[in-house]
Image (cartoon, rainbow, N blue to C red; front, side, top):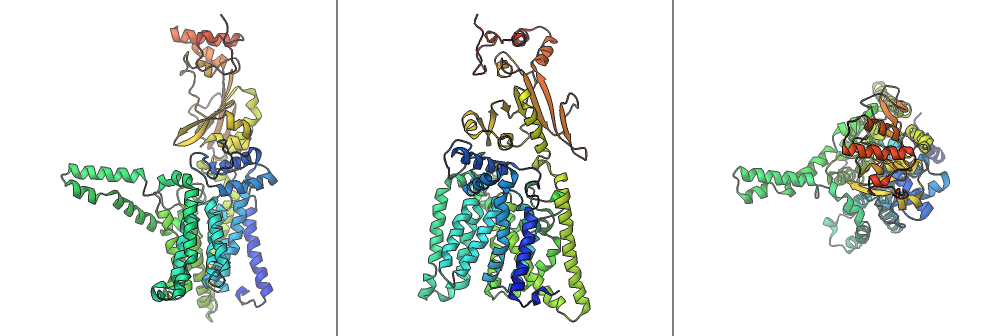
Length: 614
């Protein structure tokens, strides 16, 4: 069936609706359970939204913040405030927290058709772009976790399409600025990239270098100026968020600064004059070189089609796939040749500009390429591939040659075959192969702890579970009002909770570290039994009360318990010594029914414990 030969408008509309419905199914089926676990940003967004819904304050006790401190990474407010609504309807769970991202991803399928048409491409190219995006690996997988860049992508696409539509009716410029504002509330990429696209669009469509004497040329620039003012306002509004992320840029990178400093010292030691050494090894030169390295690394086909970036939350390396279907390499190449041949057309100029400008933001960071900051780039690749597919269709399928038709048919079959490989691997094996960064088995561990925590006075959760406190706050869940007042915060790179009520998110160092000044922090009248939860494979495989080992023999979690009686037995077996004798006497007093705090002083004594009166 030749879908592009369909004449009926209703049939074409139904075909587009069918594609969107397929996209909906691929993004919503098992949304709450695939991926099986939630990463730290997902639960942080969910718990802060839950806390706001219950108390009007975030996890730190700040009322209705514009910048969310969270772990010290200063999250933007858009996703958190949006998730409040879905949590109110569906409860505090993975589906509710992921729902806004999935909705935005489906909306982007429609928006990309609109953008392609506004660029000047045919309905055929626009439909193919929508179809390819519907089946894009990266777009499906990143739509299935709480992912601010995906929502940002929707606003970028819709905003740029509105901007292009503003050439016909100026009211669309207001829509573009609204999308710019909304996208900037979710992620920094729209905030930085959209003004660049607005300026370049104005330059391509108005050609000011050729028409600079015309008054209309400069009058048409007013939306660009308004967008700039909006950008300045947003920058001031989210200053804390921007400051919190400045360390990952090439301008503020400690690694680059150290590299430049060490290079200068090396030259000075080697006898190079100071002025020359500081000029040759100036930090700005290192930053510039890092920018170009990051920029061109984005175009590496290995990254785009075969590996993705190193972040296990955003790549498919565990199932042997990259960000995009590798069969698209050929239509992408054909599409690039087509754009270069048609470079005098505005549609080709706009798409080339999109492809070349979209990696800039990622290149400004020290760890480029990063998929988070490259969704627009991947969308540009999809649009170029759509141009290539239509060219191949015209040259091969519409040819009178049966051989050419066969080649095109084989290409389509190969593409669909690779998508089938992706579908089977992702939907049916990805959860079984979750990388350690996803904390596989965490749901089972949480269920075990919740079922057994009442038996214990302390629950130690290993910090090998990345920012463990926020996972427990979300899944238990912790009462927001109590959490805001009782949580004990610490800072070590990230800001994190070290202790909340009976939960201690820290390593248990055993009994050897105990001394008279800290023993009451572990054992007192209210605390005698301790649950220890650890991640990974233990050195000694004994004395477990619970283990979680996956189907392949990979150790995920294990739990042990320790008690006051075990501590007494250990110290009783040691040779007599003043410290040991004091500890043993104190612990035995606790065992007898009431701890004698006079033996250890008041250091570390629980707030509700009363020392024995002499």
